[in-house]
Image (cartoon, rainbow, N blue to C red; front, top):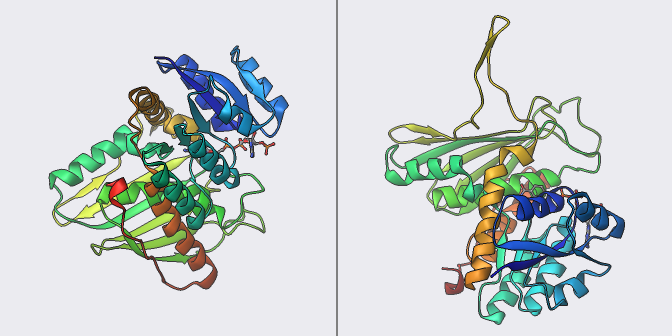
Length: 336
Ligand code: NAP
């Protein structure tokens, strides 16, 4: 079966996902697109030579008979309404992170999906498909470093647009760690604190950068995550797990080691699209496969909700400077 996809939001990642569905993956084709800017949608498919129908209205795309599944790749605040509409239509939906911009919004999706009675939602937490994170998890799960005690993480971007404000360091950036660290440790967060070091001169008045987020888990693991989104030098993701008997670190992306000009050097990637290119391919291929089989898997709406509960606490911690408790409701059997 070829899965017919409808894509809502044809900006950076929407266009990238359309490209990968046509050029890199198998079993799917994009037959419908929508963007709040119709011209942008037209250009996205025309630029790739794809014959997809451009819908002026997202609801019409979701309802279209020839559309089997939906990719939501529009901006965050629109996700909740679009995912709820896909669930109401009974169609599988892959939603880029964040699932919704608040925990309350994610919970409405979790409730709608449970009322539907079967999983329909996969959230775009692609790090769970990244070879480096999978290898790191395998080492932790093998017990080679004993029980994890502390994690030192960093999420660095070369630069961000002017519209990126202080809270987006949580909702747009840290949200990846808030998902992947729960998965990596098989643990939940119990508290968050945010500390602001000296601010870089490369930021603007609406963005305090860098930030350090301190998290504690149910098992007592302490985690520090540096979020530094104007670091200039590259897109750099770090994760070091300190265990009772050893230390395990996320592998660096492979790169040619160069001896030249009296220097030994390796390149650092500048773009998130390149850093996780294989993980994006694998997660979407998995979604296409699960639409075909009728069994949606991967990061669930509950994972999206859990990350959002922690994100809400982190934003509160940004404001108050206090340690904010994180109260995670019990996971329903539906998401076991
Ligand atoms: P982007 O380049 O701004 O693209 C978003 C597109 O969606 C824009 O064309 C925007 O139009 C359109 N749009 C906004 N609201 C819409 C609506 N209600 N209906 C239809 N289209 C709408 O942003 P992006 O970088 O692609 O990010 C999109 C989403 O993917 C975000 O949630 C982001 O956090 C996520 N993302 C995830 C990753 C990852 O690593 N998993 C990486 C990048 C982005 P206008 O520009 O006219 O508003």
